[in-house]
Length: 260
Ligand SMILES: Cc1cc2nc3c(=O)[nH]c(=O)nc-3n(C[C@H](O)[C@H](O)[C@H](O)COP(=O)(O)O)c2cc1C
Image 1: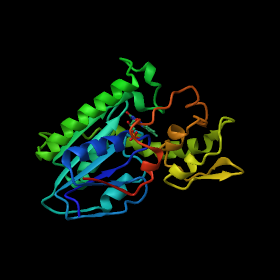
Image 2: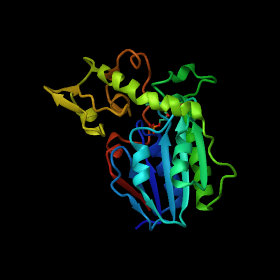
Image 3: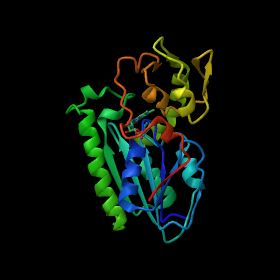
Image 4: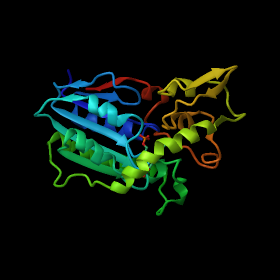
């Protein structure tokens, strides 16, 4: 059993990269992926239990809320969370705090990563991919040191009630969008999308992806396609992809990643 466990959800890899960098500061950490039901929900032997996730639709992504409710944590454990977002933090941290009663929390705004909300060149100030990565690295180091020292946040995460409403509407909105996934002629039938989908929602038929309706909107298929051949209607067509440069597509499909 590792001294620390970090539960992580990640679509384009930035949160996984954050979790790995924090784990390197802590040492002896299991990163348990939450893209599907977590492979390990018994965290009772861990001294520190963390959650690293993005803001999706103003709230928590995928089924993260129900997964977090299933995790067992020892009464004396130190609990922390880090949320990454493009424009606004939403209510995700508050939701996690309600479930696990966090000791420490932090956020990082990463404008350039959101293919959904806006192209990174339009953010003010414009954020290059290099700048975004540097900011991620700096935040991970700072958070890692704080978590290692078991620092406590002075305040609780803000409730942001408006975003709870957005988050409720998001899943319905996404269900409609999930019918708009298409692969262009640039597709070479490599199968990356099929392998990376956490819901087995993509199948290669005659060498081309076919998209079902069981999509949680992580957009990993869009972000990690080596030919940028997958789009969601017209929303993503004109936008640059930005998968995290330190994360490989195959890393996202792992169940647990151990960092010594
Ligand atoms: C489906 C989807 C919904 C998103 N919704 C929001 C949002 O409501 N607010 C926001 O600030 N960022 C939003 N983002 C941006 C992500 O929070 C941001 O890009 C984050 O860095 C992604 O982390 P990841 O690479 O680990 O998936 C969204 C991204 C996706 C893919």
